[in-house]
Image 1: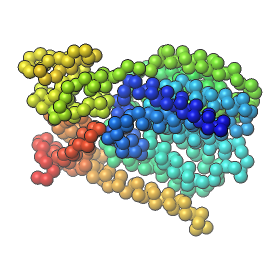
Image 2: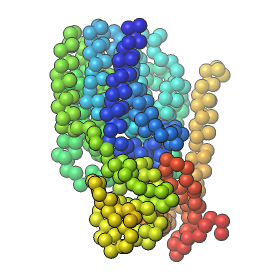
Image 3: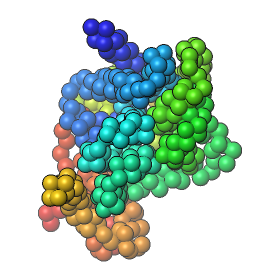
Image 4: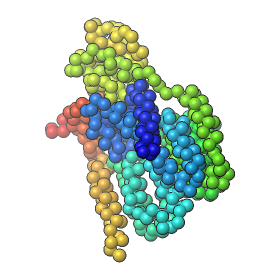
Length: 396
Length: 101
Protein backbone atom coordinates (compact mmCIF):
# COMPACT_ATOMS: atom_id res chain seq x y z
CA UNK A 1 0.00 0.00 0.00
CA UNK A 2 2.81 2.37 0.95
CA UNK A 3 4.60 1.54 -2.30
CA UNK A 4 1.44 2.16 -4.33
CA UNK A 5 1.01 5.54 -2.67
CA UNK A 6 4.59 6.40 -3.49
CA UNK A 7 4.09 5.36 -7.12
CA UNK A 8 0.97 7.57 -7.29
CA UNK A 9 2.82 10.56 -5.79
CA UNK A 10 5.67 10.08 -8.25
CA UNK A 11 3.17 9.86 -11.10
CA UNK A 12 1.56 13.13 -9.99
CA UNK A 13 5.03 14.70 -10.11
CA UNK A 14 5.55 13.28 -13.64
CA UNK A 15 2.16 14.60 -14.78
CA UNK A 16 3.04 18.05 -13.43
CA UNK A 17 6.38 18.09 -15.28
CA UNK A 18 4.69 16.92 -18.50
CA UNK A 19 2.02 19.60 -18.16
CA UNK A 20 4.61 22.35 -17.63
CA UNK A 21 6.49 21.26 -20.75
CA UNK A 22 3.26 21.25 -22.78
CA UNK A 23 2.53 24.94 -22.17
CA UNK A 24 4.98 26.13 -24.81
CA UNK A 25 4.08 23.58 -27.47
CA UNK A 26 6.46 21.33 -29.34
CA UNK A 27 10.04 22.37 -29.99
CA UNK A 28 11.71 21.79 -33.32
CA UNK A 29 13.48 18.60 -32.16
CA UNK A 30 10.32 17.27 -30.53
CA UNK A 31 8.41 17.83 -33.77
CA UNK A 32 11.16 15.98 -35.61
CA UNK A 33 10.63 12.92 -33.45
CA UNK A 34 6.83 13.11 -33.33
CA UNK A 35 6.62 13.36 -37.13
CA UNK A 36 9.34 10.74 -37.70
CA UNK A 37 11.55 13.12 -39.66
CA UNK A 38 14.55 10.92 -40.47
CA UNK A 39 17.48 12.73 -38.85
CA UNK A 40 19.70 12.84 -36.87
CA UNK A 41 18.88 9.77 -34.83
CA UNK A 42 17.98 6.19 -35.82
CA UNK A 43 14.33 5.25 -36.07
CA UNK A 44 13.52 3.03 -33.09
CA UNK A 45 11.72 5.54 -30.90
CA UNK A 46 10.62 8.07 -33.49
CA UNK A 47 8.91 5.37 -35.56
CA UNK A 48 6.97 4.32 -32.46
CA UNK A 49 6.04 7.96 -31.78
CA UNK A 50 4.86 8.41 -35.36
CA UNK A 51 2.32 5.59 -34.99
CA UNK A 52 0.27 8.03 -32.93
CA UNK A 53 0.58 11.04 -35.23
CA UNK A 54 -3.12 11.11 -36.00
CA UNK A 55 -4.10 11.29 -32.32
CA UNK A 56 -5.06 14.78 -31.19
CA UNK A 57 -3.42 14.07 -27.83
CA UNK A 58 -0.21 12.75 -29.35
CA UNK A 59 2.03 15.42 -27.87
CA UNK A 60 0.60 15.20 -24.34
CA UNK A 61 0.52 11.40 -24.44
CA UNK A 62 4.26 11.15 -25.09
CA UNK A 63 5.12 13.95 -22.68
CA UNK A 64 3.40 11.93 -19.96
CA UNK A 65 5.04 8.67 -21.04
CA UNK A 66 8.52 10.20 -21.18
CA UNK A 67 8.07 12.08 -17.88
CA UNK A 68 6.70 8.95 -16.18
CA UNK A 69 9.60 6.83 -17.41
CA UNK A 70 12.13 9.31 -16.05
CA UNK A 71 10.41 9.89 -12.73
CA UNK A 72 9.56 6.23 -12.06
CA UNK A 73 13.19 5.40 -12.92
CA UNK A 74 13.82 6.37 -9.30
CA UNK A 75 13.10 2.70 -8.55
CA UNK A 76 16.22 1.83 -10.55
CA UNK A 77 18.11 4.46 -8.53
CA UNK A 78 16.79 2.74 -5.40
CA UNK A 79 18.36 -0.51 -6.64
CA UNK A 80 21.65 1.26 -7.35
CA UNK A 81 21.66 2.26 -3.68
CA UNK A 82 21.35 -1.35 -2.49
CA UNK A 83 23.70 -1.81 0.44
CA UNK A 84 23.28 1.76 1.66
CA UNK A 85 21.21 2.78 4.68
CA UNK A 86 17.56 3.78 4.23
CA UNK A 87 18.43 7.46 4.63
CA UNK A 88 21.21 7.23 2.07
CA UNK A 89 18.93 5.47 -0.42
CA UNK A 90 16.19 8.06 0.02
CA UNK A 91 18.69 10.86 -0.56
CA UNK A 92 20.00 9.07 -3.64
CA UNK A 93 16.45 8.77 -5.02
CA UNK A 94 15.68 12.37 -4.10
CA UNK A 95 18.85 13.47 -5.88
CA UNK A 96 17.58 11.89 -9.11
CA UNK A 97 14.12 13.43 -8.76
CA UNK A 98 15.24 16.92 -7.75
CA UNK A 99 18.22 17.39 -10.05
CA UNK A 100 17.88 20.36 -12.38
CA UNK A 101 18.36 18.12 -15.43
CA UNK A 102 15.35 15.98 -14.54
CA UNK A 103 13.15 18.92 -13.62
CA UNK A 104 14.05 20.73 -16.84
CA UNK A 105 13.94 17.73 -19.17
CA UNK A 106 11.37 15.24 -17.90
CA UNK A 107 8.31 15.75 -20.08
CA UNK A 108 10.28 16.82 -23.13
CA UNK A 109 9.90 14.52 -26.11
CA UNK A 110 13.61 14.29 -26.72
CA UNK A 111 16.05 11.46 -27.19
CA UNK A 112 18.58 12.77 -24.61
CA UNK A 113 16.37 11.96 -21.57
CA UNK A 114 15.66 8.49 -22.97
CA UNK A 115 19.36 7.95 -23.57
CA UNK A 116 20.00 9.04 -19.98
CA UNK A 117 17.40 6.50 -18.83
CA UNK A 118 19.11 3.76 -20.82
CA UNK A 119 22.39 4.99 -19.32
CA UNK A 120 20.87 4.62 -15.85
CA UNK A 121 20.00 0.99 -16.61
CA UNK A 122 23.60 0.38 -17.72
CA UNK A 123 24.85 2.07 -14.55
CA UNK A 124 22.56 -0.11 -12.42
CA UNK A 125 23.77 -3.29 -14.12
CA UNK A 126 27.38 -2.16 -13.87
CA UNK A 127 27.11 -1.23 -10.19
CA UNK A 128 25.43 -4.58 -9.48
CA UNK A 129 28.22 -6.36 -11.32
CA UNK A 130 30.89 -4.43 -9.40
CA UNK A 131 29.48 -4.64 -5.91
CA UNK A 132 27.57 -7.91 -5.52
CA UNK A 133 28.86 -11.45 -5.34
CA UNK A 134 29.50 -13.07 -8.68
CA UNK A 135 26.40 -15.22 -8.41
CA UNK A 136 24.29 -12.04 -8.55
CA UNK A 137 26.02 -10.57 -11.57
CA UNK A 138 23.58 -10.33 -14.50
CA UNK A 139 24.57 -13.16 -16.77
CA UNK A 140 22.71 -12.50 -19.94
CA UNK A 141 25.02 -11.01 -22.55
CA UNK A 142 22.17 -11.42 -25.05
CA UNK A 143 19.80 -9.14 -23.09
CA UNK A 144 22.52 -6.55 -22.51
CA UNK A 145 23.36 -6.75 -26.21
CA UNK A 146 19.70 -6.13 -27.12
CA UNK A 147 19.57 -3.18 -24.70
CA UNK A 148 22.79 -1.80 -26.21
CA UNK A 149 21.34 -2.20 -29.72
CA UNK A 150 18.08 -0.52 -28.67
CA UNK A 151 20.02 2.32 -27.03
CA UNK A 152 22.11 2.98 -30.12
CA UNK A 153 18.97 2.88 -32.28
CA UNK A 154 17.31 5.36 -29.90
CA UNK A 155 20.13 7.87 -30.28
CA UNK A 156 23.72 7.59 -31.44
CA UNK A 157 24.96 9.36 -28.30
CA UNK A 158 24.26 6.18 -26.32
CA UNK A 159 27.76 5.24 -27.46
CA UNK A 160 28.98 7.50 -24.64
CA UNK A 161 28.04 4.69 -22.24
CA UNK A 162 30.25 2.18 -24.09
CA UNK A 163 32.78 1.89 -21.22
CA UNK A 164 29.98 0.66 -18.92
CA UNK A 165 28.81 -1.94 -21.42
CA UNK A 166 32.37 -3.09 -22.04
CA UNK A 167 33.06 -3.36 -18.30
CA UNK A 168 29.92 -5.45 -17.77
CA UNK A 169 30.89 -7.90 -20.48
CA UNK A 170 34.39 -8.19 -19.03
CA UNK A 171 32.91 -8.86 -15.61
CA UNK A 172 30.76 -11.60 -17.12
CA UNK A 173 33.90 -13.12 -18.63
CA UNK A 174 32.38 -13.60 -22.06
CA UNK A 175 34.61 -14.55 -24.97
CA UNK A 176 36.14 -12.00 -27.33
CA UNK A 177 33.87 -13.28 -30.10
CA UNK A 178 30.77 -12.65 -27.98
CA UNK A 179 32.03 -9.16 -27.15
CA UNK A 180 32.40 -8.46 -30.85
CA UNK A 181 28.89 -9.76 -31.54
CA UNK A 182 27.14 -7.94 -28.71
CA UNK A 183 29.15 -4.72 -28.48
CA UNK A 184 30.67 -4.05 -31.89
CA UNK A 185 27.75 -5.55 -33.86
CA UNK A 186 25.21 -2.92 -32.77
CA UNK A 187 27.75 -0.15 -33.38
CA UNK A 188 28.33 -1.44 -36.92
CA UNK A 189 24.56 -1.41 -37.49
CA UNK A 190 24.29 2.17 -36.22
CA UNK A 191 27.12 3.23 -38.54
CA UNK A 192 25.45 1.42 -41.43
CA UNK A 193 22.21 3.21 -40.70
CA UNK A 194 24.02 6.57 -40.84
CA UNK A 195 25.57 5.60 -44.18
CA UNK A 196 22.21 4.65 -45.64
CA UNK A 197 20.66 8.02 -44.78
CA UNK A 198 22.64 10.94 -46.25
CA UNK A 199 20.61 13.43 -44.20
CA UNK A 200 22.08 11.89 -41.04
CA UNK A 201 25.61 12.23 -42.35
CA UNK A 202 24.88 15.86 -43.26
CA UNK A 203 23.53 16.51 -39.75
CA UNK A 204 26.66 14.87 -38.24
CA UNK A 205 28.74 17.43 -40.15
CA UNK A 206 26.45 20.20 -38.86
CA UNK A 207 26.74 19.00 -35.27
CA UNK A 208 30.50 18.55 -35.57
CA UNK A 209 31.06 22.03 -37.00
CA UNK A 210 28.33 23.87 -35.08
CA UNK A 211 30.66 25.15 -32.38
CA UNK A 212 33.69 25.56 -34.61
CA UNK A 213 33.80 29.30 -33.93
CA UNK A 214 33.43 28.92 -30.17
CA UNK A 215 36.69 29.48 -28.28
CA UNK A 216 38.18 26.92 -25.91
CA UNK A 217 37.05 29.11 -23.01
CA UNK A 218 33.50 29.30 -24.41
CA UNK A 219 33.43 25.52 -24.82
CA UNK A 220 34.69 25.06 -21.26
CA UNK A 221 31.97 27.36 -19.95
CA UNK A 222 29.37 25.40 -21.93
CA UNK A 223 30.71 22.15 -20.51
CA UNK A 224 30.51 23.59 -17.00
CA UNK A 225 26.92 24.70 -17.65
CA UNK A 226 25.88 21.22 -18.80
CA UNK A 227 27.76 19.58 -15.91
CA UNK A 228 26.13 21.98 -13.42
CA UNK A 229 22.62 21.43 -14.76
CA UNK A 230 23.19 17.68 -15.03
CA UNK A 231 23.71 17.30 -11.32
CA UNK A 232 22.65 20.64 -9.85
CA UNK A 233 26.38 21.16 -9.08
CA UNK A 234 26.24 19.13 -5.85
CA UNK A 235 25.49 15.75 -7.43
CA UNK A 236 28.29 16.42 -9.91
CA UNK A 237 30.75 16.98 -7.09
CA UNK A 238 29.61 14.03 -4.98
CA UNK A 239 29.19 11.68 -7.95
CA UNK A 240 32.59 12.47 -9.42
CA UNK A 241 34.25 12.17 -6.00
CA UNK A 242 32.54 8.80 -5.49
CA UNK A 243 33.69 7.55 -8.88
CA UNK A 244 37.28 8.48 -8.03
CA UNK A 245 37.09 7.15 -4.46
CA UNK A 246 36.21 3.62 -5.59
CA UNK A 247 38.09 3.89 -8.87
CA UNK A 248 35.08 3.06 -10.99
CA UNK A 249 36.99 3.30 -14.25
CA UNK A 250 34.04 2.50 -16.50
CA UNK A 251 31.96 5.29 -14.94
CA UNK A 252 34.94 7.62 -15.24
CA UNK A 253 35.41 6.60 -18.88
CA UNK A 254 31.78 7.40 -19.68
CA UNK A 255 31.99 10.66 -17.74
CA UNK A 256 35.03 11.72 -19.76
CA UNK A 257 33.29 10.74 -23.01
CA UNK A 258 30.21 12.81 -22.10
CA UNK A 259 32.50 15.74 -21.19
CA UNK A 260 34.35 15.45 -24.52
CA UNK A 261 31.07 15.21 -26.45
CA UNK A 262 29.58 18.30 -24.76
CA UNK A 263 32.88 20.16 -25.16
CA UNK A 264 32.91 19.49 -28.91
CA UNK A 265 29.23 20.23 -29.55
CA UNK A 266 27.15 21.80 -26.83
CA UNK A 267 23.41 21.49 -26.54
CA UNK A 268 21.55 22.46 -23.40
CA UNK A 269 19.69 19.13 -23.38
CA UNK A 270 22.90 17.05 -23.18
CA UNK A 271 23.04 17.98 -19.47
CA UNK A 272 20.89 14.99 -18.51
CA UNK A 273 23.47 12.58 -19.98
CA UNK A 274 25.65 13.34 -16.92
CA UNK A 275 22.98 12.50 -14.37
CA UNK A 276 23.06 8.65 -14.40
CA UNK A 277 26.85 8.73 -14.07
CA UNK A 278 26.69 11.01 -11.03
CA UNK A 279 24.04 8.74 -9.52
CA UNK A 280 26.36 5.79 -10.15
CA UNK A 281 29.18 7.49 -8.26
CA UNK A 282 27.23 8.83 -5.31
CA UNK A 283 26.76 5.55 -3.36
CA UNK A 284 30.55 5.24 -3.04
CA UNK A 285 30.75 8.74 -1.60
CA UNK A 286 27.94 8.03 0.86
CA UNK A 287 29.48 4.69 1.81
CA UNK A 288 32.91 6.15 2.59
CA UNK A 289 32.34 9.73 3.67
CA UNK A 290 28.73 10.67 4.38
CA UNK A 291 26.68 8.31 6.50
CA UNK A 292 23.83 10.77 7.18
CA UNK A 293 23.34 12.70 3.93
CA UNK A 294 19.77 13.94 4.53
CA UNK A 295 20.90 17.62 4.77
CA UNK A 296 21.98 17.37 1.11
CA UNK A 297 18.36 17.68 -0.04
CA UNK A 298 17.93 21.31 1.05
CA UNK A 299 20.91 22.84 -0.82
CA UNK A 300 20.02 20.56 -3.74
CA UNK A 301 16.52 22.06 -3.94
CA UNK A 302 18.01 25.54 -3.55
CA UNK A 303 20.54 25.10 -6.38
CA UNK A 304 17.94 23.47 -8.64
CA UNK A 305 15.75 26.52 -7.96
CA UNK A 306 18.59 28.86 -8.94
CA UNK A 307 19.21 26.90 -12.15
CA UNK A 308 15.48 27.05 -12.97
CA UNK A 309 15.59 30.81 -12.46
CA UNK A 310 18.66 31.12 -14.70
CA UNK A 311 17.27 28.82 -17.42
CA UNK A 312 13.50 29.24 -17.06
CA UNK A 313 11.08 26.90 -18.79
CA UNK A 314 9.07 28.44 -21.62
CA UNK A 315 5.53 28.74 -20.38
CA UNK A 316 3.81 30.72 -23.15
CA UNK A 317 2.73 29.21 -26.49
CA UNK A 318 5.40 29.20 -29.19
CA UNK A 319 4.84 31.47 -32.23
CA UNK A 320 4.10 28.34 -34.30
CA UNK A 321 1.35 27.24 -31.93
CA UNK A 322 -0.09 30.73 -31.50
CA UNK A 323 -0.20 31.38 -35.26
CA UNK A 324 -1.58 27.94 -36.10
CA UNK A 325 -4.41 28.45 -33.63
CA UNK A 326 -5.46 31.77 -35.14
CA UNK A 327 -5.10 31.00 -38.84
CA UNK A 328 -8.42 31.17 -40.70
CA UNK A 329 -7.47 28.33 -43.05
CA UNK A 330 -9.79 26.22 -45.17
CA UNK A 331 -7.30 23.37 -45.44
CA UNK A 332 -6.84 23.44 -49.20
CA UNK A 333 -3.77 25.64 -49.64
CA UNK A 334 -0.32 25.83 -48.12
CA UNK A 335 1.41 27.90 -45.47
CA UNK A 336 4.43 29.77 -46.81
CA UNK A 337 7.19 30.71 -44.37
CA UNK A 338 9.87 33.26 -45.10
CA UNK A 339 13.12 32.89 -43.17
CA UNK A 340 14.65 30.06 -41.22
CA UNK A 341 12.07 27.99 -39.36
CA UNK A 342 11.91 24.86 -37.23
CA UNK A 343 9.94 21.63 -37.60
CA UNK A 344 7.42 22.84 -35.01
CA UNK A 345 5.76 24.76 -37.84
CA UNK A 346 5.21 21.49 -39.71
CA UNK A 347 3.78 19.96 -36.57
CA UNK A 348 1.44 22.79 -35.65
CA UNK A 349 0.31 23.90 -39.10
CA UNK A 350 -3.09 22.60 -40.24
CA UNK A 351 -1.93 22.86 -43.87
CA UNK A 352 1.29 21.84 -45.66
CA UNK A 353 4.28 24.10 -45.05
CA UNK A 354 6.47 25.44 -47.87
CA UNK A 355 9.43 27.79 -47.97
CA UNK A 356 8.31 31.21 -49.16
CA UNK A 357 8.51 31.77 -52.92
CA UNK A 358 6.48 34.49 -54.56
CA UNK A 359 5.63 32.05 -57.35
CA UNK A 360 3.86 29.83 -54.77
CA UNK A 361 1.55 32.62 -53.55
CA UNK A 362 -1.44 31.50 -55.67
CA UNK A 363 -1.47 28.20 -53.68
CA UNK A 364 -1.01 29.88 -50.31
CA UNK A 365 -3.61 30.36 -47.60
CA UNK A 366 -1.27 32.25 -45.31
CA UNK A 367 2.27 33.61 -45.22
CA UNK A 368 4.42 33.76 -42.09
CA UNK A 369 7.35 36.16 -42.26
CA UNK A 370 10.02 35.26 -39.74
CA UNK A 371 12.20 37.63 -41.75
CA UNK A 372 10.44 40.65 -43.33
CA UNK A 373 8.43 39.95 -46.52
CA UNK A 374 8.73 43.23 -48.40
CA UNK A 375 7.10 41.61 -51.46
CA UNK A 376 3.84 41.12 -49.60
CA UNK A 377 3.17 44.86 -49.28
CA UNK A 378 3.04 45.05 -53.08
CA UNK A 379 0.68 42.09 -53.58
CA UNK A 380 -3.09 42.66 -53.75
CA UNK A 381 -5.60 40.55 -51.87
CA UNK A 382 -3.57 40.03 -48.68
CA UNK A 383 -3.74 41.62 -45.24
CA UNK A 384 -1.71 41.19 -42.07
CA UNK A 385 -3.13 39.18 -39.20
CA UNK A 386 -3.16 41.34 -36.10
CA UNK A 387 -2.13 40.24 -32.62
CA UNK A 388 0.70 37.87 -33.57
CA UNK A 389 4.25 37.86 -32.31
CA UNK A 390 5.45 37.34 -35.87
CA UNK A 391 4.38 38.91 -39.18
CA UNK A 392 1.49 36.88 -40.63
CA UNK A 393 -0.39 37.53 -43.87
CA UNK A 394 -3.77 36.03 -44.76
CA UNK A 395 -6.08 36.48 -47.71
CA UNK A 396 -8.55 39.42 -47.49
CA UNK B 1 27.62 -26.36 -26.13
CA UNK B 2 25.05 -25.75 -28.83
CA UNK B 3 22.55 -24.23 -26.42
CA UNK B 4 25.17 -21.81 -25.01
CA UNK B 5 25.73 -20.52 -28.51
CA UNK B 6 22.04 -20.06 -29.28
CA UNK B 7 21.71 -16.49 -27.93
CA UNK B 8 24.76 -15.35 -29.89
CA UNK B 9 23.40 -16.97 -33.06
CA UNK B 10 20.04 -15.34 -32.44
CA UNK B 11 21.77 -12.00 -32.07
CA UNK B 12 23.64 -12.59 -35.34
CA UNK B 13 20.30 -13.32 -37.00
CA UNK B 14 18.92 -10.05 -35.63
CA UNK B 15 22.04 -8.30 -36.94
CA UNK B 16 21.47 -9.75 -40.41
CA UNK B 17 17.78 -8.82 -40.46
CA UNK B 18 18.62 -5.20 -39.64
CA UNK B 19 21.76 -4.98 -41.76
CA UNK B 20 20.30 -6.38 -45.00
CA UNK B 21 17.92 -3.50 -45.86
CA UNK B 22 20.47 -0.94 -44.68
CA UNK B 23 23.13 -2.43 -46.96
CA UNK B 24 20.71 -2.40 -49.90
CA UNK B 25 19.90 1.23 -49.22
CA UNK B 26 23.54 2.24 -48.87
CA UNK B 27 24.36 0.31 -52.07
CA UNK B 28 21.71 2.28 -54.01
CA UNK B 29 23.41 5.57 -53.16
CA UNK B 30 27.03 4.34 -53.25
CA UNK B 31 28.28 6.96 -55.80
CA UNK B 32 27.79 9.54 -53.03
CA UNK B 33 30.55 7.85 -51.02
CA UNK B 34 33.07 7.37 -53.81
CA UNK B 35 32.55 10.19 -56.32
CA UNK B 36 33.02 13.76 -55.11
CA UNK B 37 31.56 15.21 -58.33
CA UNK B 38 28.35 13.19 -57.96
CA UNK B 39 28.19 14.17 -54.31
CA UNK B 40 28.42 17.86 -55.07
CA UNK B 41 26.01 17.66 -58.04
CA UNK B 42 23.53 15.79 -55.85
CA UNK B 43 23.73 18.51 -53.24
CA UNK B 44 23.06 21.21 -55.84
CA UNK B 45 20.26 19.20 -57.46
CA UNK B 46 18.49 18.63 -54.14
CA UNK B 47 18.78 22.30 -53.20
CA UNK B 48 17.45 23.41 -56.58
CA UNK B 49 14.49 21.03 -56.57
CA UNK B 50 13.64 21.93 -52.97
CA UNK B 51 13.98 25.67 -53.55
CA UNK B 52 11.90 25.78 -56.72
CA UNK B 53 9.03 23.94 -55.05
CA UNK B 54 9.39 25.44 -51.58
CA UNK B 55 10.05 21.93 -50.23
CA UNK B 56 11.75 21.29 -46.92
CA UNK B 57 14.95 19.27 -47.41
CA UNK B 58 14.13 16.80 -44.66
CA UNK B 59 10.94 15.85 -46.54
CA UNK B 60 13.12 14.52 -49.36
CA UNK B 61 14.48 11.00 -49.28
CA UNK B 62 17.14 9.84 -51.73
CA UNK B 63 16.27 6.47 -53.20
CA UNK B 64 19.10 5.96 -55.64
CA UNK B 65 22.01 7.80 -57.14
CA UNK B 66 23.95 6.98 -60.31
CA UNK B 67 26.66 8.90 -62.14
CA UNK B 68 23.97 10.56 -64.31
CA UNK B 69 20.86 10.92 -62.20
CA UNK B 70 19.22 10.59 -58.85
CA UNK B 71 15.82 9.38 -57.75
CA UNK B 72 14.11 11.02 -54.84
CA UNK B 73 10.85 10.69 -53.00
CA UNK B 74 9.17 13.72 -51.50
CA UNK B 75 6.73 13.16 -48.67
CA UNK B 76 5.60 15.90 -46.33
CA UNK B 77 5.97 15.16 -42.64
CA UNK B 78 2.62 16.21 -41.25
CA UNK B 79 0.10 15.07 -38.68
CA UNK B 80 -2.20 13.88 -41.45
CA UNK B 81 -1.19 11.33 -44.09
CA UNK B 82 0.34 12.93 -47.17
CA UNK B 83 1.03 11.66 -50.66
CA UNK B 84 4.53 10.83 -51.81
CA UNK B 85 5.95 12.08 -55.10
CA UNK B 86 8.77 10.27 -56.85
CA UNK B 87 11.05 12.32 -59.10
CA UNK B 88 14.12 11.66 -61.20
CA UNK B 89 16.69 14.45 -61.58
CA UNK B 90 19.42 14.46 -64.24
CA UNK B 91 22.67 15.52 -62.63
CA UNK B 92 24.02 17.21 -65.77
CA UNK B 93 21.05 19.48 -66.50
CA UNK B 94 18.98 19.22 -63.26
CA UNK B 95 16.00 18.37 -65.48
CA UNK B 96 13.24 16.91 -63.35
CA UNK B 97 10.79 14.24 -64.45
CA UNK B 98 8.41 11.87 -62.69
CA UNK B 99 9.88 8.46 -61.90
CA UNK B 100 7.58 6.65 -64.36
CA UNK B 101 9.05 8.32 -67.47
